[in-house]
Length: 432
Ligand code: DOR
Image 1 (cartoon, helix red, strand yellow):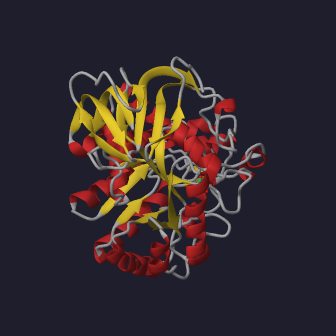
Image 2 (image 1 turned 120 degrees about the horizontal axis):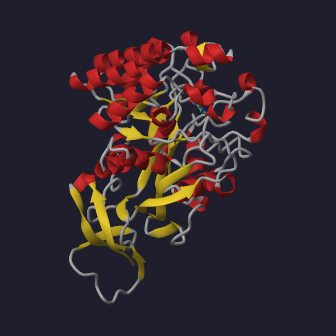
Image 3 (image 1 turned 120 degrees about the vertical axis):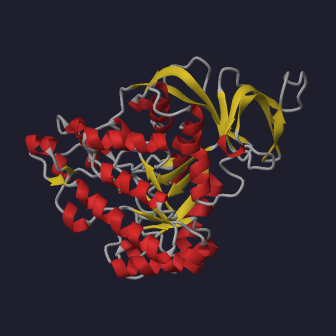
């Protein structure tokens, strides 16, 4: 039994934003007590005064790198980073080695996570065998093995006929198809956003239209098939606008963005910082503003880290040969809270973007809410304390973040997953 006492309980799924005491029992939410806290409690008590108590955060876009790239990250270290960052659930992408395109790999990930994980792990299986974009995987056996969704993330399903079949086939399963929207021919050879910064630095550019064309096609296929489409890491103004139009047309389309797209622009490439090399690339200020507006007006449904660990050998090298990716599990919450501080989004919207919406998109029962009977997945957030993101405090095996050295505000002080405390920060600790 656990009592989280005196916090501001924010649960958008039940329309709740009020002071109270949350009781967890046998791995479930038991209920919320109003008024004075009970004087005696037969279990652990966490004092949450001045804190937010929210449904466990869900990161629907993470690369855990296991199996195959365990020197970059593994299920144990990735989920530890998740817990420290406030996440109780992470959806992990299929670009492992072997690719998660068979029930054996899906089951391996689930078993390993059950044994070693500090967070719930939701394996996302590949859309196409070997991520090769040619042959569809077996959705029936993958979903029976426990796949939570399907994605060829890292690669676009360039064959439109295959994408149509995938959307038709996924529909009766009720799964969303998660897409890395990027036309490979338009983006070919580019390492940065096509524009003045890339020209000035002499880095080959990938144009925004590579993403926009891909989003347009997939929305049209979703319209034609009635399937559920989810667009990953939206980074462009027209990408946001097309999602807005699709929603207005009543289509079953959702979208996410990552903190680097609303925090940074391609100006971060100055000095050829390989930690700012990511795919899709950091865009222009105009794109960043459009992403912010999408988060504000409800067009973009979720914030996901796109946590993509790469070891130093792939980042401490010349820009053109560096790997694409940014780790994000320990900075995503703080960067989302920064949007609240600047007045772009409300506290309720922060929780919606990081918990309620990902739970809805992935149809996770008992998650993304603190309603009685829900899973005891809870994040306690200190929205105020300033801290510095230091390299030594990174729990991931890889340290590739452009945010190292940044002063951030707000963080998770306790992360409880299925009733077990997986992270608890010492009070008053300024960096971790
Ligand atoms: O920057 C990225 N890194 N973008 C992706 O789509 C894949 C990811 C990775 O796996 O490293």
